[in-house]
Length: 165
Ligand SMILES: [Ca+2]
Image 1: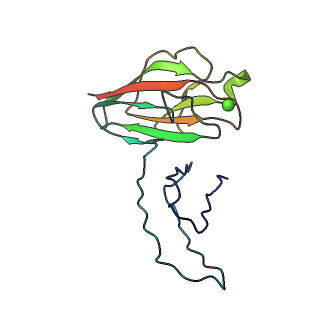
Image 2: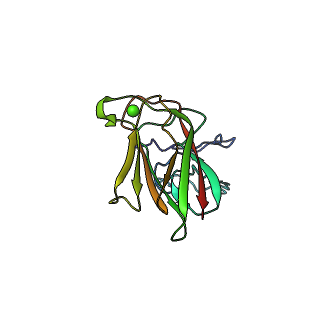
Image 3: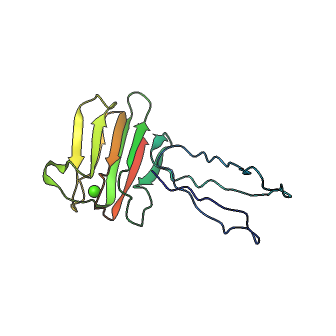
């Protein structure tokens, strides 16, 4: 899906590059020496992993999460799931501070979907467009999915949550 850079015998070394995965964070490096080529001194490379922080289980008393790449536009074909967990009897409060997703009929392209408890739990909201959804205080677990389809993006969203007794 993403083009992988290919470096040929070079001196000076190839420039740094960033490889984006929509899932996982592994990168494989192959050293290929075609037959007939002399071997060289080898290479040394360093890498860092940037956590795109797309989705996760959020259990701290309060926090924020946002669409991938925020404050830049979110990428196409992204899918993130967050669960906001709380102890039984507690309540999850959720408020959107900014919201700008590609609008579509029935919000079937880019959307934020909120369920109680889990993916199979009751639907709390299904949002798209530019209107900031109203604050929610529901249950003790919220399941939230962000989805973007293959084209057209938007500014994204930031949400703030509290888990309270
Ligand atoms: Ca889209």
